[in-house]
Image 1 (cartoon, rainbow, N blue to C red):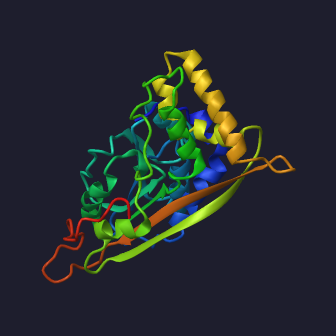
Image 2 (cartoon, rainbow, N blue to C red):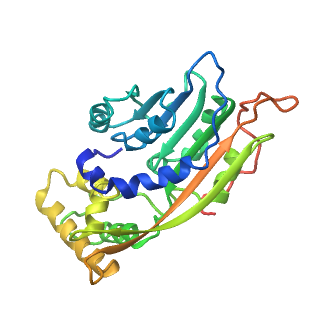
Length: 290
């Protein structure tokens, strides 16, 4: 996992949080018993911008934000000190719920977890009857912002071979249909879709500023001990981005951004012969390039 700069990430907080708001709009009300508060997990909570939306919709819920970055967790604890949300360290490559959840949500995180589709069965199995798993991931790994970064990393430059394997490929996430075999099951309600946002970014080199908070982090980490190579890469990448994403006459930069969404709700009662929350379902292994 890359190192994170919460302040840099939050420079585009409105755009980054919008997709999570759209995701939550499709999440049904969890069916929690009257004798306890709703139990909600926010996987990859980052600096807490997604957790804030969860606390606003379900102020009485017991909400835990999980993240791998101590810097992000520290910022989340500070920014959400006015709420009852709590935060904990977790590695989503291995994290398995140790208690039932009414809602497990994730905002733009699973693309950092190789093979994350294979974790979904464990998470849906931990849902209470009527519970929901909801996540969104960027679906733009073949967009110029990523493709140019990968091609530059593979080219000759002062970074040499230090960036080999540092960046994710176009198969970092699946298409909506690709997630279906990992989510669908008897009695479940499954909602999968994609949306391309046209973010209008402000400021000079706005797309570079955006990716500096996210996709460029592995490059910055790999070249952290070589400032000259780091600067050379960033300057060359900036020039490529200026051509791929030209600013308009009013100074804004249009930045198309595709995202993939998934919401699956397990049945309130168990289908005949099965547990309500369900374990892994038997489906053909999908093609990750689908």
